[in-house]
Length: 249
Image 1 (spheres, rainbow, N blue to C red):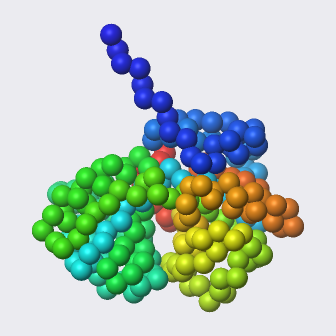
Image 2 (spheres, one colour):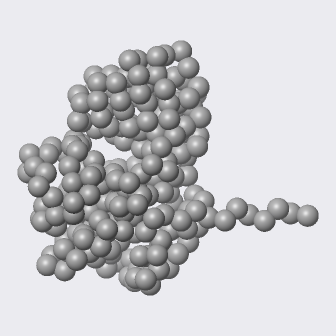
């Protein structure tokens, strides 16, 4: 008798996607929106105005300890220990033969704390590899995939949209940098990062706060004639700007 496939996981915004009429699909074990309407329109919105993405299926992994930076130097490509607090770096993790296991963004949250964000389809592989490779260092690897919801606002109008909901200094926030702040009154880590190749922000927040922030961003959006968007809209933007998205077609 063949075992039934596992039930796909759902993000904290699942009900919102369904209310918007999204076409849902199984992606890396998650029930995710494939499209809301026209993929072309969503892509164009991200390129010319802005798009709103639920990226809560991504894999967050924390490394904490006095040698967390050195552990990442050993485990990943590049010298992550040199990363300044509040900055981020696009990097990758390779297998023993130099093949790419996944592309990643690493954020330095403190002197002894880093956040690694892996693609959903490779998150367990990355977690296992980091756990093994950090074994000889004073560093703890923690699976934080259930600790975060991740919402992205991407596109040329994203600073105005997000700026209407936060008092964080977005103008002073550099590309590939992050800072703690609030969005619609909700605590969040606000990062000027993303895979679309356009200007934009990624918001790391508690899952219980995701609906409140999504609703606030949606209400702020009509002034800029923007659109909710999904991963298929972001992938061609990433390809156009030379961003690799490992684990996507």
